[in-house]
Every structure is written in structure tokens, then in C-alpha cells.
Image (cartoon, rainbow, N blue to C red; front, side, top):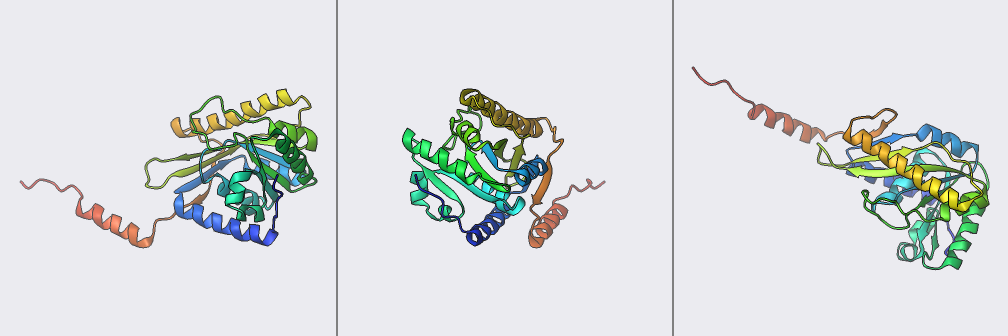
Length: 246
């Protein structure tokens, strides 16, 4: 296992950079459940468990945890990826060999120690690797249920999705559910986490496909550059329909 080397100032700098990159790359960020998540983090140690679908996911987690929640945040990461990208250790990532059960057990105990008080947050991408958004069952690993039991931490299920639509850039969707109390029976806890993360993904799907957007708010929206907006307006004027003569 590779321990975290989190530096508070580096995490804040990296999170600001992540926010800028998200702002440049996404048309909007729509999120549900952020206030409830913030209250849970303020009250005590919190384990956030989400799906893992894209390269963007760690930057999204960093942006939410540091810029939106101001949490003392860490995240579990595949040890091979952390060795390849060691700077993630400076923002709070710790590495685990997903193929080694003994290393997994060490990482669970380590994560539980990190969850030692208010504003402490550990984020886990429960699938352990990027998985297409359409795959069911999600295949979450049991680690989140083990950590919650050992740390006696509340678990907040979450979901991430990136969706292209009527604009050139995609929209980032985030949905966080109500906190789940730690469950002593790890097998049952694992099933509960799988069910609740799936429910948040379904909530995003309804918002996109049926327009059921209750509870979602736009926290960042890209504004078109002034030159681009002017060019689009000019093009629209030049190509507007004109009545036929006579």
C-alpha cells in the first residue's frame, strides 16, 4: 500500500486548477444533494462512494471535496496508477494493489484511520476501474462496506455522468444521496452501497431523459466568449429567412 502524502496547500492549488479545467471543458455542472453532503462532512467522518466512468472522475472528486466542501479529503487509488501519477499522492490519494487481498486489508485499515473526525472525507470509486455508464450490475467492490464498518463512518452514495447534448461541450451531472449509517454485516452493506449508487445513477438518467430535474442545481455554467457570441449572432442575421419577392 502507498500512503497519502497530502499537502494542504498543494491540494488547494490543484483543486483550483481542476476547477478551471472543468470550467473550460464542460458546458455546465449540475449537482444534486450537495448541501446534504456538506452537512454530513461537517458532522463527522464521511465515506463517499461513487461509480467510476471516466478519466475526469478524480478531478471532479477533488473539485467537490476541496473547492465546494473544504474537506480534509483523501481518495483510494489503484497503486499502479499512483506510481505512474505520483502527484495525486500530494492531493490525498493513497494506493492499493487491487489484486492483493492483504494489501486491500491494509488499505481498509489505513482509510479507517484517515476517517478520524469532522471534515474528514475519503472518496472511493467503488468499481475500482473505469466502467461504461450502461453496465449493470455496477460491480462495486466490498471495500467501502469494510471501511464504513471499521471506521464507523457514514456513507454518502454518489453518481457521476458526462452527457453530450445540444451544445458542443458536455454537461457534468453529479447526484449525492442521503447518508447511510455504517452496517456491521459487510455483505449486506456491500449490497446496500451497490443499490444506492445505482439509484443515484438512475436519478441522473431520469433528469436527462425525462427532464425530471427536481433538486439539481447548476453550480458552474460556461459563458460563450464575447467574440463567439457576436459571430453567432452575425451568422444568424445573415442566414435568416427572407420573404419571397412579389
